[in-house]
Length: 345
Image (cartoon, rainbow, N blue to C red; front, side, top):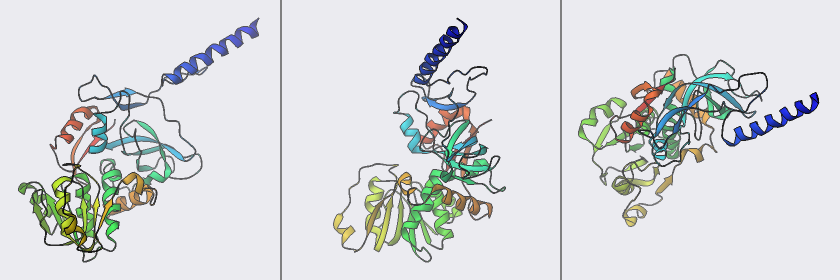
């Protein structure tokens, strides 16, 4: 009789576990408290701004993943825009920085206790996350979590997009949308590589800031003049800006299109583009590029440059993560340049 009651209890436990898994809740386990203390930013259709902090399951890492205790996150327009259209319960977030709580089981990546920067395809905005070790890099002591949180999407996009121009020493580089997160990094990195850098901005009052970043020249307005010609264009605006930037390419020049902050629809003079000869329009999507160069490589490069004082992330706004809804709205409304960082307790 005692054994039958025990089997019944086990069957009841199995039913409870299956139900918990279907509902996304932690599964019960005999003899210990299994309530998750992990929290994350999730989409709530009824909440102002649609983004709120809610309890979520603890991360369940694969062998090649480390568990990271997140200390800072940064926002990008892409994930915030998707949050406005996503279903309830979706967890946004690409950029994170924090400390490794549990190293990867396969022995790869940073050790437990290491300060790291990392990225995920989604769900990075949480207290604890599992991160593949090829998307993690250790941080030098001089680099803060807030600085590091700006590296993954904005920093890596700028770093890897610039490689499409080859050796940049002495070349002319145009960066559109230069006051944004990617543009800020691109201006600095292009100047560091020895390029002659022109930054493009929407307003004249942004000119001093861009010159401080390292731009040799600043073009104001949505249209790019036909001259001078550029060997490389880093283009994140779309619309009229992309259409006119294509005519400003030097023979053999490349335009890297990586964003559409103004408009995804573009009209351009195809003849002006092709008669120059050997010009290229390159479609850049970071998560595809990571198949060629792991995020860990670029993240470490960016961290080393910041530690050496050669690169300065522009954090315009730093707030507690409880303010996510308001900060996300301010980002979409362009109420600040550069990057916004949220810190976790």
